[in-house]
Image: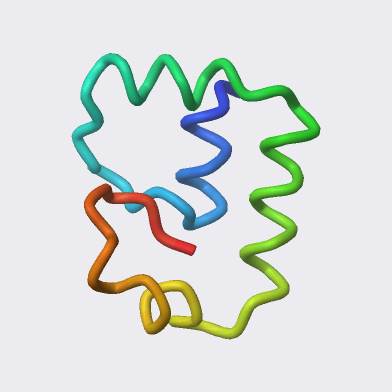
Length: 64
């Protein structure tokens, strides 16, 4: 499963998010350990933590 698919399945990237090719390339260049770390961090944070603390800075469809 591609990194983008794994991160979408884990809820980090909302399904149907249109990423530009450069962002998709970056996501798919992550190592398996990096993908696992992102998924692990998301599972340990309370719902909405990142959105509450970085809402003004959020510019992509990636959700923690």
